[in-house]
Length: 306
Ligand code: 1OR
Image 1 (cartoon, helix red, strand yellow):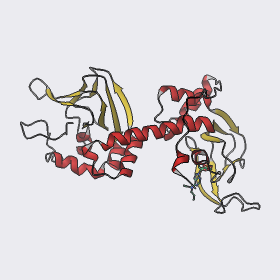
Image 2 (cartoon, protein in one colour):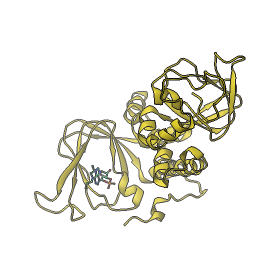
Image 3 (cartoon, rainbow, N blue to C red):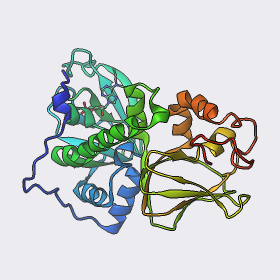
């Protein structure tokens, strides 16, 4: 069974440091490509990213039909697929049984860029499935259990906790339930801008929606005398207009101090903020009518900007 406690990685300030397995630049390039689209690797900072890449070990699986994981075993490694294909079998008895059908039913298969073997490590549980190669000449990258828990998992949980607390304070999202906010927390990416940097530029196509996590930014618009429209602070959002209306950016956002933003891509915005899109429209009734809400005089008091 899965208790909340087993999900919380052990943190202590002991002397642990992740293993370093030296790699050729060819190996490093192949590895980077293999993890580039894997969500577990998406939110690592530079140091964590480098630690994890150094800790991964190349594991060739030369033949078809080789068993990489056996259901019911103790978990030791997490695997990322660089090359080849693997079938996942689940026996509902909870472990692999003897005999030709001992592996149970094939439930899915996993190819390049995919990963498996995280469940046993995350939940301190026996392997939940059997994994078999279905092609020859496969390449896996293996990450040991401790590094997986200490870096990949800890990071995922820390980010979630941090963003849940942040999102709870945002009035726009107050109508969402906790699990909806958690999904947003998991989907957010972070970017930092130095003072003076342009975060988005009027007229550009828009594909991200932003929250200000830290710092101060300004909204500027070419049609506005002097350019300045208003100031944005922590918790304010921007970038929804281009996404809601499929229009170019209606204003420029400039960082006034060092600014840290959390952002969602267009797909995440549509999937996760669907329920609040109506609130955004309500905040500014001109939204959705093809009218630029910052163009006209007066009447604008929402937090909608671009
Ligand atoms: P693991 O450490 O338990 C086996 O080792 C791995 O197979 C497991 O982590 C997952 O990474 C992977 N049910 C259980 N394990 C699965 C499943 C799965 N899919 C992939 N794995 N199901 C299929 C879901 C599409 C549920 C079947 C009832």
